[in-house]
Length: 206
Image (cartoon, rainbow, N blue to C red):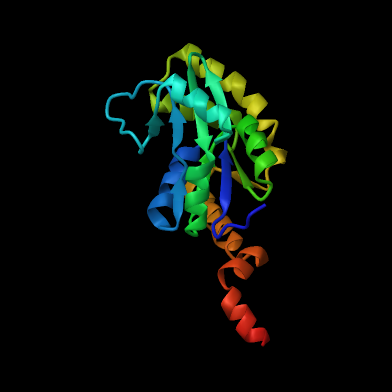
């Protein structure tokens, strides 16, 4: 497998655990981090822009990309397709950028099968009660939707041990510091230093 100059991170969590708030704070604080933008066949919602929230394409083009093995992972959700482009990810990694894939445990398995060096981070809530309170506090979902999210959360959380790192998001500032620490530490891994600083290492050893 080709060595890239950036790290690929998988970020997963049950809905309401604070995953989006954490990665958005990291994007603001660290110019070397990018969030993956997925392809989708669903129509843009009000305020969404092509290339920012998603790459919006038609079903025929999406199926062509599947046939070309262009995706790391893809899934059909109801009547729409969603997928993560290999080329888009590799282009950013080759630039030395760290890339976050915000996907669930099933998508994470697909990515790991193709890119074993991906680094998994799972965000846990401090309790199920706190998780429910956060979902209610968002004020965006009806009671039945919240109930479905809570039921789904148990299954999602059961896969936490498939990830290299687990952050319990009780105190946001502490969780954010832990997330930052993981990203910084991964940039000093031997294979990356060998790739990025090969001239220096060769000079030191000559």
